[in-house]
Picture 1: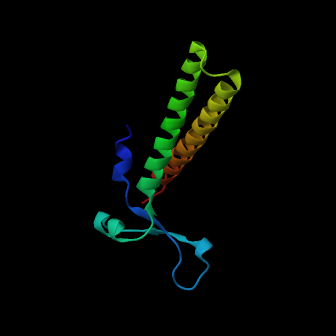
Picture 2: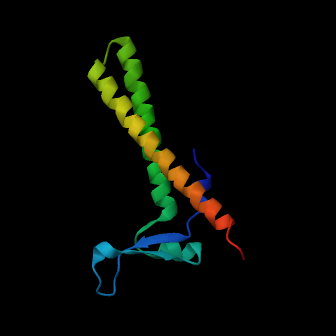
Length: 112
C-alpha cells in the first residue's frame, strides 16, 4: 500500500512526564529507530500509517456498499452514509497531504 511511510519513524508522540499536564504532551525527536521502538507512545510513522489504512478501508467500504445497492442488498441511506464518510476521509487525507507538502516546500526554501 503506502510503503514510504514506514521510513519516517523519527518523531515520537509522548505525554509530558515532568509533572506537567498529560494533555500538554510534546512532540519529541528521536535520534535512532531503535530508540523509537524503546519509548512509549505512537510514532509519527505509525500514526500516519494507521490514518492511511483507515482512509483506504473507508473508501473500500463505500465501494462495497455501492455495489450492494446496485444488487439491491443495500438501501439508499446506507449508500449515502458510506459515500459521505468516504468523502470526508478523502478530504481529510488531502488536507494533510497539502500541509505536508507545504511544510516540505517551506523547509526547502530555508537558507543553510
